[in-house]
Amino acid sequence: MSSEVGTEALTRRGLMLVLSSPSGAGKTTISRALLKEEDNLVMSVSATTRPRRPGEEDGKDYFFVEPVDFNLMINRDELLEHAKVFNHYYGTPRAPVETALSEGRDILFDIDWQGTQQLAQKAGDDLVSIFILPPSTAALEKRLKTRAQDSAEVIAQRMSKASEEISHWREYDYVVVNEDVDHCLAEVKAILKAERLRTRRRAGLIDFVNRLREGY
Ligand SMILES: Nc1ncnc2c1ncn2[C@@H]1O[C@H](COP(=O)(O)OP(=O)(O)OP(=O)(O)O)[C@@H](O)[C@H]1O
Ligand SMILES: Nc1nc2c(ncn2[C@@H]2O[C@H](COP(=O)(O)O)[C@@H](O)[C@H]2O)c(=O)[nH]1
Image (cartoon, rainbow, N blue to C red):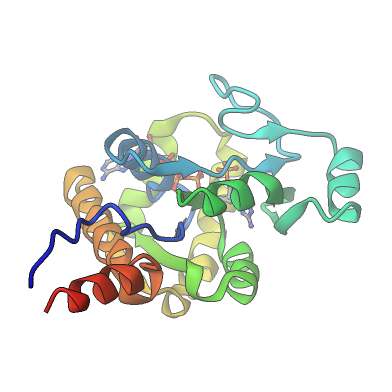
């Protein structure tokens, strides 16, 4: 006897996709492009004490907060992770992440290696981490200068920390080189697609397979 099984029950829990890189390698660029092309993916908007750059919007690019408010968020356990990066504090608000995951949505993080280590401890199998490398030191510096949003002093400081940030590449599940945006985006999309199909994430498979087997 055969019967229609249907794949509507193939639901899964959302995953947490982390992008890290030295400053200027292209996390924001890749994230924006990915969000345009992927329906079930939402961005985690971080809180930061860093001053707003020209063009950045509160609540969209970051939640820009005073140090005292950032400390309150830590004390109330409202941050999933937090770290000091380039003399400012950055952290991931917990509530939107938990909502997205419980709704089966995937969530994208643009965070540094310190935050990734903290998320890895808390999220375990839900986490997929990608380290983005620039094609060269010269290209990285050119990108920071071309972005033209930070002072020469800030750019020099970020370049001086690039090697330290890169030293954490082995801690990530995947490494991609962002020489060409389209190529890098295609690689990140391929990773996301494969990770979405992992057996352990697809809770709905149990019912699907059981019903499939009943038909034989
Ligand atoms: N493949 C690429 N080729 C040339 N320029 C690029 C490429 N990818 C990104 N850029 C440019 O490099 C600059 C830095 O990119 P972006 O802001 O995305 O980096 P980031 O990793 O998010 O930096 P930060 O960590 O400081 O937030 C931007 O001006 C962006 O347009
Ligand atoms: N650990 C965390 N790191 C974060 C978070 N949000 C951003 N970042 C990282 O900070 C640097 C600098 O960012 P910029 O916007 O000032 O250029 C970069 O490496 C980001 O990935 C966060 O919530 N937690």
